[in-house]
Length: 332
Image (cartoon, rainbow, N blue to C red; front, side):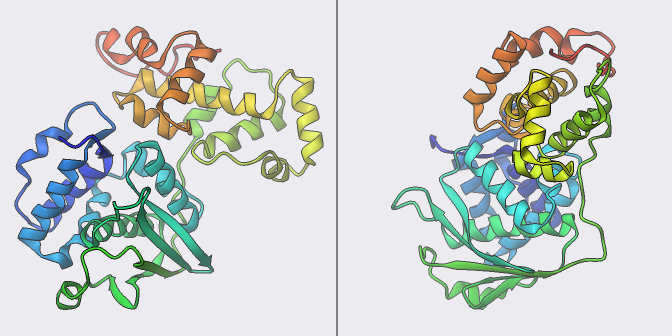
């Protein structure tokens, strides 16, 4: 078994993609059903080879269309909820870091309606194959389409591979090329970019609170962007005040900006722990923690017990009859 990992959410998308392309199912599919945010990398590699065998190299970039059947998954909503295509890729990069992916996207250049990206290994000697990169950019393409961009095109070097991937031309490319680059171009769509609704999170957050309106607006802004929290300067600009004024007002209420961010993260994490069966690692990613240990450490400091123990004590499984627990108290 490989000791490296892939995102279980991405695997579910790719497995759905096989169905969308009417390719035979992967027999190892049951291995993705465990309550984990990651699966061992061998399963992802097996799926790529399976699709390559039954659908050809040109099908790989279309496996990502399975994204459209997973719109309600929290990871999908979190990534598609980015304000623009550049931020969407940045959120994807965060997911790669969180699951310790051995391959990472890197934005080399960007501009209005374009991005230049490389896809490389984090250490020498583990460059992704052309096939792996096609799968990744296929998922990125579907996420961008779900976000609302139009006329998306993807090139590897000078060869267009999306929306139509030419099989004969792809077969002439080297399987591994560490200098290979990818170019994405698009135009703004009339469709509004998808944003993650935070109405319920916000309402639940402020229950019983005596916070003034400006602090509620600040917390709402943070709740909208837990994965990529705005800087103090950005938050101050959003409130039309100076950075110094914002910091002073928070200090007068016995709080700093970083403490408010931590409070928002722990409360939303607690809601997921109580209300869902999402794996702990996925909850940590959705709430913007840098990694699993950061989630466990910070949540335990603020709430008094680890995320695992919190779920065991207050999660849905502890209550008969199911239903919503949104009225149960959140961590202080």
